Image (cartoon, rainbow over all chains, first blue to last red; front, side):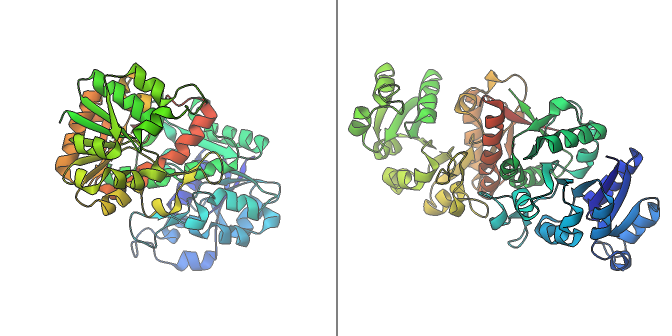
Amino acid sequence: MKKIALLGTGTVGQTFATRLTTLGYDVIIGTRNLQEKLAAPGKDGAKNSFAQWHEKNSNIKAGTFEEAAAFGEMILNVSNGANAIAVLNLAKAKNLDGKVLVDISNPLDFSKGMPPGLIPELSNFNSLAEEIQKTFPNAKVVKTLNTMWCGIMVDPSIIKGDHVNYICGNDEAAKTEVKTFLNTLGWKDQNILDLGDITSARGTEAVLPVWLRIYGAKKMGAFNFNIVS
Amino acid sequence: MKKIALLGTGTVGQTFATRLTTLGYDVIIGTRNLQEKLAAPGKDGAKNSFAQWHEKNSNIKAGTFEEAAAFGEMILNVSNGANAIAVLNLAKAKNLDGKVLVDISNPLDFSKGMPPGLIPELSNFNSLAEEIQKTFPNAKVVKTLNTMWCGIMVDPSIIKGDHVNYICGNDEAAKTEVKTFLNTLGWKDQNILDLGDITSARGTEAVLPVWLRIYGAKKMGAFNFNIVS
């Protein structure tokens, strides 16, 4: 599957878009309203707007969430976790049905300040990935890559040696496809740990609280976990 | 500080009791009611009762939570996290005041089956360690060692190479004392990662959900995490 839709234009979406294009994928990056997004300032004011990124990467298609999802053979949810269900509704269920939907987002709750916690309804005995699977039962939801900084997601070789990427989902064939996709990013089979069905996202999304504390202590995000025994 | 009180007679408590005794500490293991505990069967029926362990380790003192806490210069909470506050109340605040209280337990919630989640009131925007610190403001609560199997806690050398043990707490001197204590168990300074104040227990207690999923996938608990960059 060479046509990849990215739902979300933030740092994670941009990072995937350029890396996947370099690797030869046919990529579209989707947003709520492309004209509004192109007119919007960046998070740092004038700097780093989506328009600036888009101009530098004019070879990469951009469109609405719906257009992106319709184009993609595989869909990557790289939206803000709090908005993920809304984003996928805008993408429309008919454009997700039967497709592999890779969920990379985390249900972070910034309402009580920094560092964020997890959205209570989407954590502990639930997870964002499960909520997506329940809401879009015909999509084949696979959770992976959500436990690290996006630079490592798309190029694990920036860290020497072994480090882990978890994967989970209900559809075995979909997980196999995603593992092959991960291989193309540089993930070795030995570092892809299959945790079982989509309920394991309760575990992998719960990595964020300790990840954020380590990030705070080390003052850098370019780290990952390795499981040793 | 050579006098160590263990609050809890389960596997973690027993593992610490024998290891610390071997290392030359003067150990007491505490339980709710010693006579009842000595009369109780093990979890597997007749096997592995506390009485059998106690007979084999008759050199190790045993008593009530209160007796144990009164004896200990340093207190290790190795109780079931759901009961931890009740256990510490039985140990009595006056026996904890001014002492280093090392909290190793996790607020696991088994009410919805296996694997457990976390107790909602003691997770996400709260943690068991914070709740203990709030309830016993004169104890110096330090959270550590709770992210791994107890065999690794007491002897990290059973895993080759580096692997991480998090520590957090509000009292810097107490953390320094606990780091020295951890050194005696075999933890190297380079593998003890100080995450800051006690609110970081929100992160380290949230390791359990993914730990349990990895345990389920690997069918073994003798693993730990290493942070690589």
